[in-house]
Image 1: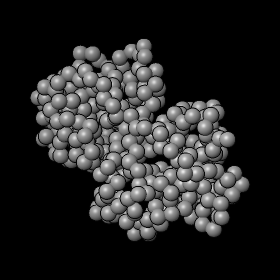
Image 2: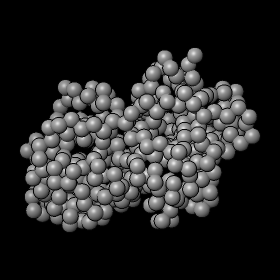
Image 3: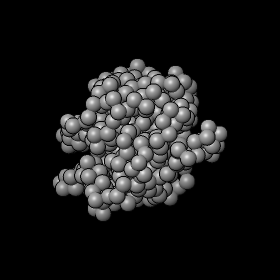
Image 4: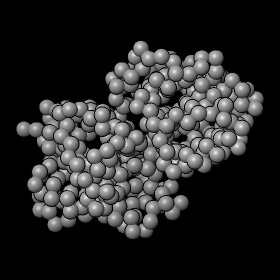
Length: 356
């Protein structure tokens, strides 16, 4: 008999956590699982990637915190075997909704970013921290994206290590292959095309990348920077900074792209300038596409993915000079010929079946 699994999401707008959830859903065996996508509000660019056999339920509320009672009613009526959540606010809402329910589902909560940075930089309000720790204590399984993140969850949220499992973000490589097949080069082939991707937020440090790119084009004006990602509050500031730095001819903001992989595939270089991350999907995707990568030390795990001076360069966060030098010296990197094994395993939910 198939197990009923529910993925509880606020929406499916274009972000890393949403992409990971979509990839998991697409790769789960529908013969083993009866899959439901439960959404606070049914909207987002990734909805089109959800298979037709997945049931989608729309709670039709504006904010996640307002979904608690509808969520509770849904769980009581549907009685799922497993519920998965990947964001702090959905995990907290799920925990509150489950209070007092006798027949509780097996809960799997994915930690989306570094607890150390959130707490030490005071980016997680005290009440949220208390509620999040409550959620983690009551969860059956917590997913950490890297071994280092697991240690941070233990230290900063005081969670038993046996409850935490390291689960690398899975890639849907079949989808990537399909989306680069027979595609035309979107770039001027006479230029050196550099791609960066992510929501336009302070955490992605695109401002630092723009300052670094000014130094790059001053030395070699063949370089072009293409930034993919929807606005999340910083687009106006970044466009203003681009123009102030005299980069309007060299930097383009492409917005959200349904198929970012063709831009990755035809680029000469991928750059991740982030100040903080969980485990960046775009780095994993560009590794799969055998692209040289320049990335900041935004997570300790980065040196497991990028071998400095071979398949990429690792630079310090907000180090403008090192970032610009790395971009200029990208041709010194060795050709990437070997397959890189970076796709996360999807045996996790099959293992969960034994516990449910």
